[in-house]
Amino acid sequence: MLKSKILGDYEGDKMVLTCARCQHEFSHDISNLILVVGKEATLHAARTRAVCRRCNTRGDNTYRIVPKSK
Image 1 (tube, helix red, strand yellow):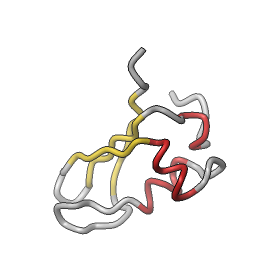
Image 2 (spheres, helix red, strand yellow):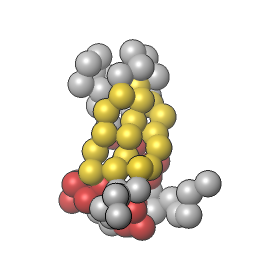
Image 3 (tube, rainbow, N blue to C red):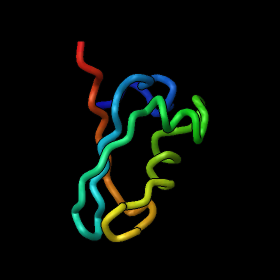
Image 4 (tube, helix red, strand yellow):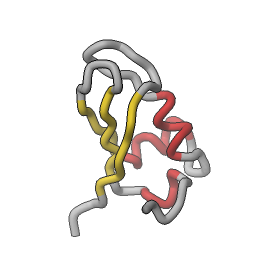
C-alpha cells in the first residue's frame, strides 16, 4: 500500500507504468514528473498524462512506484 497519493512524497523514486492497450512497460523519474505537474499533484494526475511511446495511448495504464536504491 502506498504511503501517500501526492507526487512530492516520492521524489527520487521511479513511476513504472504499463500500457493497458499494448502492455508496453515504461518508467519516469518522479523528480522529472514534479517539474511538469508540480509537487502537490496526485499520482493519478501524473499517470493520466503519461503517453505510451509504442502505441501513443494516453492515460490508459497501471503504475507502480519503485523506491530509489539505497
